[in-house]
Length: 144
Image (tube, rainbow, N blue to C red; front, side):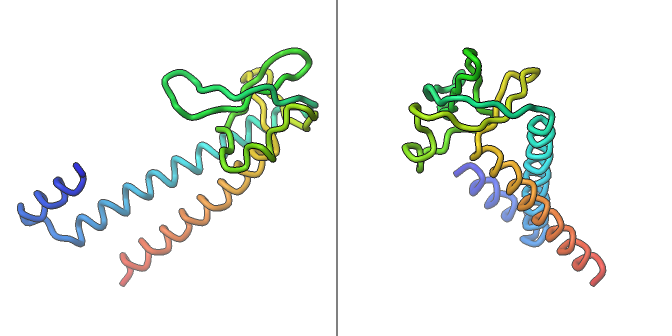
């Protein structure tokens, strides 16, 4: 709601729609670059880890966040999955009765389940593609 009010006020002050669209695209670009950096960082942490067998024991919310995270037990110690819990397929992905393959990074005290591994790889691919497409869009608009 606040964004709409700011948008209308800027239009009333004479700011052009094309300038506002440029600012909006720049903000989206910054967000996409931040996502790409996060997924690259998460993948580096994952690559520095070692493969272990673990068991899902519960989900819990971290701090003030309402986002649940999977907690796995590996060699008697609890580790939090780096990425949030998949809510839609929770019963199929997180089964406390069977061991799963995890990547453990003891230095960062986190682990990666299969869902987190796929998300990191796809996150890099998609956000890098979006950065490339936005760069092409900017170059076309600047050169034309």
